[in-house]
Image 1 (tube, rainbow, N blue to C red):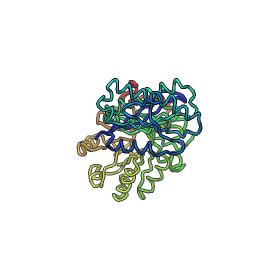
Image 2: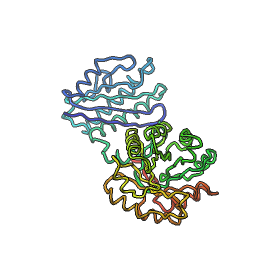
Image 3: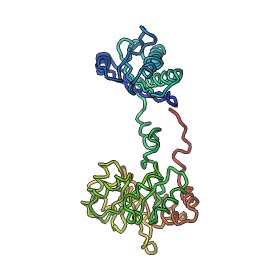
Image 4: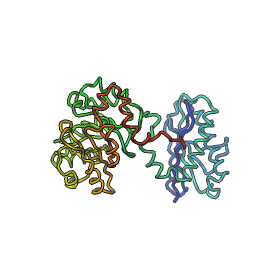
Length: 394
């Protein structure tokens, strides 16, 4: 039973075209929906057959459904004029070019949803954009576009044009996480505005900053960094679910729980982050056996932080060896390892050689007289921007 789905967006301005369509057998679910669409009339969204000219419908028969409410005869003329002709011509051309197999002309039907902006004026563009979009949507439907590989590859790098910002995920380490521990919102805003543009940057609302301003500071940071991955370093020790919810409501992408918390707290914390679709970071500061702690949990966090505290930097060494130990023990698991505490350009190479996925840096950048230069000192030793050499191909 054939059931094919296609979509395409083409054009610009008010005449832009967005086509959604389904193709399938007359005696299948698409055929049933086709009959229901033509026999069910709703105010402002009356279906119509695609015709090349009056009395000449295309084949396979195609039902057009207006997406935007038709309010007057001016709106109706755009649908019943250039849009209807464009869709019909695209279907007929797809049949002639054998994009649609000719032996399916009388066996398949098409349902096509058409977007026409109320302020669209240019009939030439309405026709051309809708013709091209419909033809492309048919080709995509027949080809099964997009392939799964493209969806998985693009889902974390795409920016929806109307939404205007990207929701990043941690899919290509290493990353540089900047710990905004300065308890001054004014200074934090200046730091963010000075940072170089890079897909490898993560922002962290540090514990002192959140303690001073509350979780609302996350929303303040988000206003300046709409497309950045934002970590709320709450270092939760109790009521894990509640604190996750607080950070989530302020648009955090990740929340940090302390490894010293009770397992029940950590388990509830990880469960809640997973339920909400955000990341759980587990900070292992002062946890003597990191692997043992991870093995004792019901589920692994998304990120484990090997953290050397500021007050112990003079006496405690970096635990690079534990990075390898964690990765070996949990090989094949989706677990990233972050390192934090006294990271400098002089030792970042050690962290990268140890295969750390996230390098957390605070004072070296946030207290620098030249924030951009200091940040680039780290980025220069990491891989290039994710999208630096990207070519737009659709």
